[in-house]
Image 1 (cartoon, helix red, strand yellow):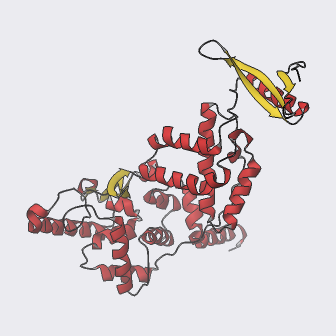
Image 2 (cartoon, one colour):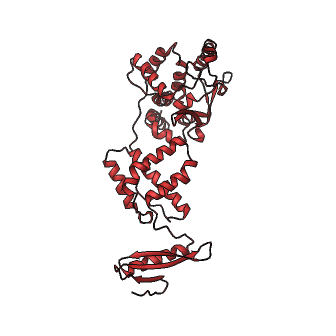
Image 3 (cartoon, helix red, strand yellow):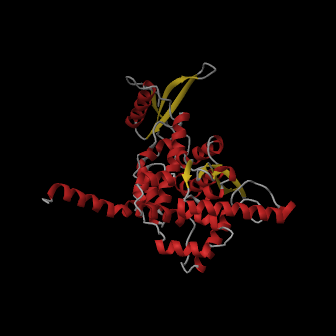
Length: 381
């Protein structure tokens, strides 16, 4: 059937071979000066007209015409190859792409990005929750897809991010385990004389993350002022141990040390010097505070195993090094240290994060506040 045009419409016609309606709209000119045309399709003329009018509104608003051929898989691949690899650490690239490859592409990969709806995203997230994935993993799926579509918007391939419209599943934050005062003292007793006594004591008393503690170098330690500066973290990437920036800007911080811990670090430095003399040419001088017997960085995986063994010997059962961080925060708050100070010591991105994780420990303080107001306002004495 011949094409015809209504007021404000592009060229609309019905294809005789299959009866499908098509609409053609000029969306600008290319670098060669030739007109660029966009085609939309529909089962009815009215559907095509609606699509053409929507396209024209986008052009009038200065928005580029979306790429109607781009699939979700193609977008994710292009985002990975052209952008993601150059923006984040290699370990993060692997993490992002694992999410895309295993959880997004198998379900939505063949779908055109312009046809993607928030209902599609909600359906995907619901299915992943039903399959047994954790809420944090499902939230990460939405985040990865949302970041890829954001990049698609920058490229002009799509005009809105439906992943941002999808509902984020709520995560019930679980209270982590914490050592009691008695358990903490039992652990310190077991550590006496251990090669890594200073390391575990530091993590317990300051709440440093595992990577932050292992990334410390002697130039970060000021014995006189009793301060240690957290500037980097040690982590495993691609089979190798590397140092990278701390997790967030607020993670770069200076932490005041207990006097007992300063003494442990001074003794540890002496023992390390003795080891260096014994090992002689077998020693590699890396500058790290906590090292192997040869001076090389201490692998975080080995730390996990070593700490688990120590806890078993102390009769505490199985504990993970990260629980030393939780224990440090809990013990500080229970001892009356202000929430803001604890947040700064831990290097949290915000005080709200500290309150969300450790707010339950503040219940006695809230009760004391209520008692104080009762005394001030209703006690006649």
